[in-house]
Amino acid sequence: MRVQWPQVLWIARHGQSAGNVARDAAEAAGLALIDIEFRDIDTPLSELGVQQSLALGRWFGQLPPGLRPEVILCSPYARARDTARHLMEQAGLRSGRDVRLRVDERLREKEFGVLDRLTRFGIQQKYPELDQQRRHVGKFYFRPPGGESWCDVILRLRSMTEMITREHAGERVLVVAHQVIVNCMRYLVENLDEAKILEIDRMGDVPNCAITSYQLHTEREELVLDLVNFIAPLLESGAPVTAAPDAPAAPKP
Image (cartoon, rainbow, N blue to C red; front, side, top):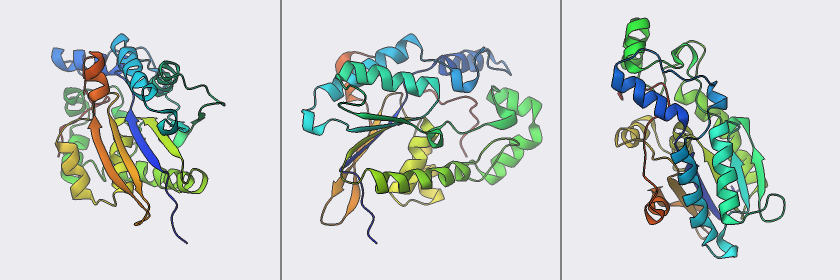
């Protein structure tokens, strides 16, 4: 049985969040703990994140109606849901009429377990053995206690991509999620290996509200990479580009 891909697949990272801002402040001050009151799932967009989401929405709204998203698949985390909401409002996409919105827990952020809310310094200070283990094993396979490795994220995303091919073949699909989700979706769609996806990761963080997209090559019956970390919508709107990793962050292997 042949795999039936969407006509277009966009994968976008959420706008800058209050967690990104708090993490940058903690790292700059040399603190062990990121000072933020929210659960990770409840962390909202920053004011700049709202601006970025609106800019992305304007870009989608300028596309001809026949080229705009028909389906939006979104992480349940507040920063992703709010990004999708602002994007839809700015693009003039009405849920249930112009676009089908589906919140799916498989698109949630990577779970950090005991390392949650810790800075690089905090991880090294509180869990030096885990820090050494992670450096030895590498982020692709390292699973912090109570958390996930990239492989764990990829495992849940496999069923997501299967659902996309089963239920949204031939449609225009937008995924709104997180940095690790963007990279792990690339791993699956482009049939990459550990070395290649980590090489891509080392090249830099995924900018907030950047788009990576694929177009269906009908003769080859596969998705072909079109845009990578596309930030023109932000630049055209004058919205600052940010690329802070989600907390916690540890040195790249």
